[in-house]
Length: 293
Image (cartoon, rainbow, N blue to C red):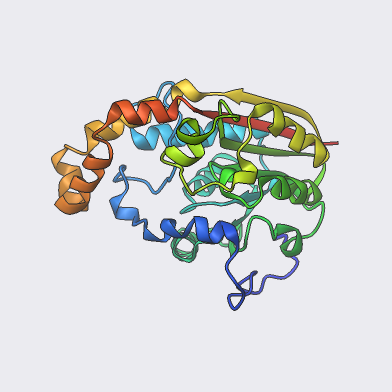
């Protein structure tokens, strides 16, 4: 694989946690058995253009990101902020002879993904690491990747612009950075109109990341990227996800699987659909592609 130093961990656990680790601490609470989908471990909103289930939507989003990146058999891939790693296993199955290094700062996700890789005999093709998204430059060799991917994670990184810079360093010439990301539709909003403070993402994105697509494009250019493409898929993400979630919380299978207490809590969080839709109206969901010359 392509690590400069494969020792575990790649970050020093004795130091203060990175800002993104503080923001993502809640992800340690995720239980693979208590997600909306009983048959997968994806943690994303999904792409619902044609999908009808959480798993199908998450797989569609995973595939859309791979197409955006131009992922091909034999590529060397870095996946940053991998969740439980479900997308990585799908990419390995879809693109023969590719290899993946994947990083996270969430210890429980790291353990889950490593265990699955061992069970499925894939440790020669994928290596999971504990590393901050803004420390990848120290963990891997410059110019060693064909693709750097981040599936619904980059808005957490402190900062996203620093991640862009380091991703550019790690890509070979002609390599591609591709992400799915969440940005404000009205970045100048303040107070109760600001989705950073009022939406379901409150506290999960550094203020330095809270900018719209024009600034997003500028940040990528500053990092050295060319041929930047940003495409909104907002209408096929948030609203259908919320509709599917609302249907699911009353299903007997879901209640039995996660328990009445958690089901009631999720139902309560989803009860004010008007407020939730007002929040997501201030957010955009984008597919992004940028090339290193």
